Image (cartoon, rainbow, N blue to C red; front, side, top):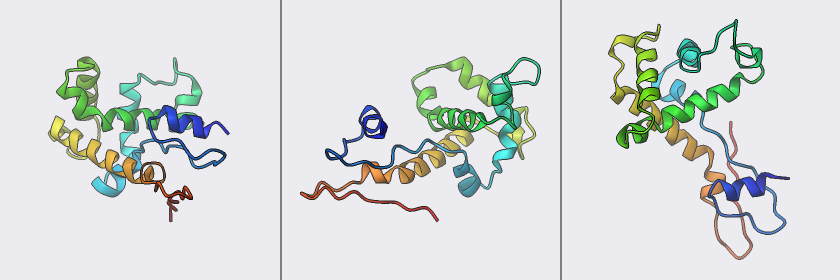
Length: 154
């Protein structure tokens, strides 16, 4: 029941009075799999380094088998999605450098050749999928009968 309020807080137009709908879909690392042919599992080591997650000091829910690990994936996808914008305005330079360094030191294919431009491309792929996943909010019609587009996933 809180989704209509979350929609407005996220900056999208409010649903018509009394209408419930799907809320915003978070960014996903899955876009890298389809657009960049990168297995999300290959990013697990990078994610652990960036968020300083380890078996000794981290809550077990955030580790790879933890039930809150998907929240960590969303956070990392968001960081990649806005990596280019943050770099452009010099926001969080140490975090940005840590992400780039972690990727270069990882076991990712071609890790030594990962540059900011590569991460920018990944971020654009995540953002493109994010926009598609949220079309049910951003592409609603403003007809008198307040029809909302419904996007179904296969």
